Length: 144
Image 1: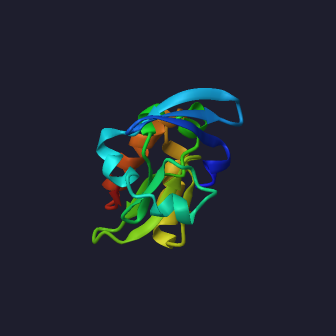
Image 2: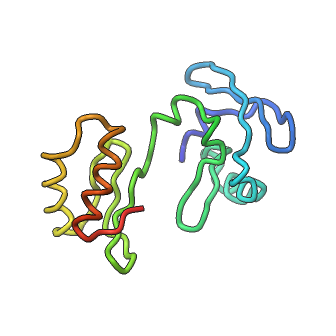
């Protein structure tokens, strides 16, 4: 949420297009708000209330979404907060898998299942994410 210190909007080029800069690398980029998130972007309440947050971040229900996912700079593509939410069969969140593919949970049963994941999952993160989702689903969890 605090990438607002690292991504700066330099100029608005169109209704949903911006000249921006990745401050940490000094790299300019053009960001167009994703079509499916434009309805979120037009509400400026969140960035007004959270000035340190990335200007392209918006709440969507219980989640915060990047509204320039397609055009986001490399630093954002490598930084992922939550990769998967792990839910019970009724939809109650039991834990999250973060971008580092670590489980965050207080649920002892899920923690025990996760020990199985650690020894079996593919080494590549790209291959591991869908594998983890399938594995947890097979153990009776819902994964989003």
